View 1 (cartoon, rainbow, N blue to C red):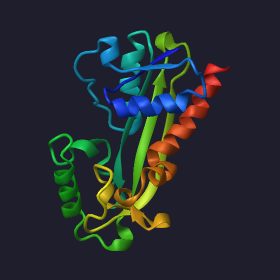
View 2: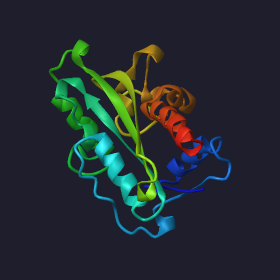
View 3: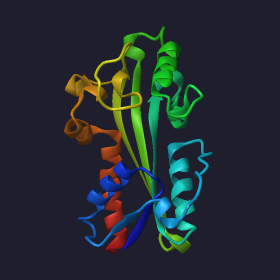
View 4: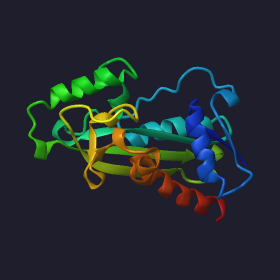
Length: 201
């Protein structure tokens, strides 16, 4: 079975393969490059669910089972921002430091007890020709936003996102700790169960 992850990220492809191998040992995970997709998929949805489905459906329209994810940070005091704009919050895509500085600036006057937030990850799967209904699974991890960086690991907003049960930011956790509680791990667990049910129905 060939499945296309709507991404060019080798780490994500390797991770997905590890998750899906127990479902079907013959699964082959391909990237956008592997199927000759040139350029980027326009993510113009207003929710994580919409963006993940846009990417997954783009692959399905090419005749493959498509899987995609969309994730970001939702801060309660900012009415859910940066949300789907997490990677380009400060205007330039992928500038982690600028994104973090803008976040801190925008909640500078928010008291500690109201700096609640959650990381959200949505994984979507679309099937060619509408063979099955799309699968959409959402995972989240609650936390709070600190006033300054803590930790050197991770990426994005990880140094500011504090997870109380571990008394650590995402950036202070080991990969094993983060993978046990993260929004992406929670979404992936739900997705694997749903995908298994469809494949083995």
